Amino acid sequence: MAVKADEAATKRDLAQAEEKLTGKIDQVEQSLSAKIDANGVKIEANSAKIDQVEERLSAKIDASAASIHRLTVQVTKNGEAIKGTLTREEYKKDYNELLRELDGMMVVLLRVDQERAATNAWLGRVEADVQELKAR
Image 1 (spheres, helix red, strand yellow):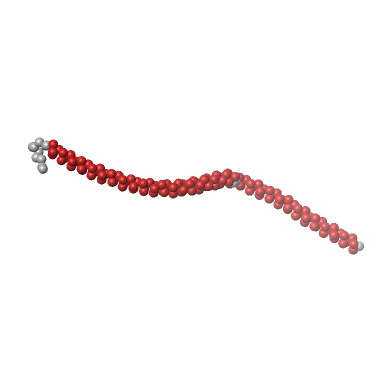
Image 2 (cartoon, rainbow, N blue to C red; image 1 turned 90 degrees about the horizontal axis):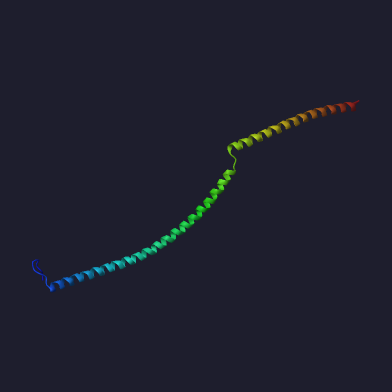
């Protein structure tokens, strides 16, 4: 029953149109419900995957945090050790002082060596005198 544009719609025509529209609405509603349910299942599956990824990332973050803590402690120790080392100027100062002390020791050793040589020469003369006195 095709209604022409210039004819008035009857109650029966309106009822048929309402039935068609109600049927279409029911079909669309069922289709949307099915799609929503399918998307709900996908969301739940993805939620589980997301939870697994979150657990793995949390473990990695915890491991990284522990590593960072160890590195921080080591950097702090290294910084303290560096503060305790001599600077070039301090090293030169200490080295020069050591050389001065060694020079002083060499002076003393030279004197001792000279005294030893003089003592040996004196002993040689004394022994010679003793030998000469024995020979008389």
